[in-house]
Image (tube, rainbow, N blue to C red):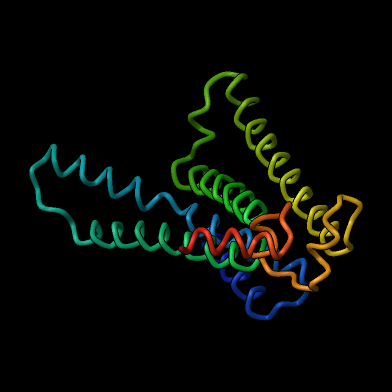
Length: 193
């Protein structure tokens, strides 16, 4: 229930757009949060195993589980694709993977009681440590894309001033960051012909 409220809040931020930072965050996290509903997939596979062992027909909710598993996977990828159209691919994929793992971890902790199955001190230390390391990696990737975007917008000292002089800020500018616009056109013509 909490995850549904979370996704509803993210969609609301995407629609209302209170600030550019919140909107960017919502686009980045929405796809992974939706895809993180992996309990539908695991539960439907558990039903398949139980039905194969007992020989009974599939229950009515099995088809609902399959539909929800496909919907969350496909819906999350749609949000990821939409995010990649709006923002840098490195940012989009980092936010997707980070939110997917955190969302799946929360769902498994609530639905399958993951923490009850952790045995020993090492498991209790390494599971949260792995999540923290993941989030540090996501944070570094997001900050790197922010710095790159800032340098590109201000025409930084990286020798790429001619790339940003056109004033365009689209994702196409990042396809070939070391080429001028005329070099990129020539490459595009070679690929098309």
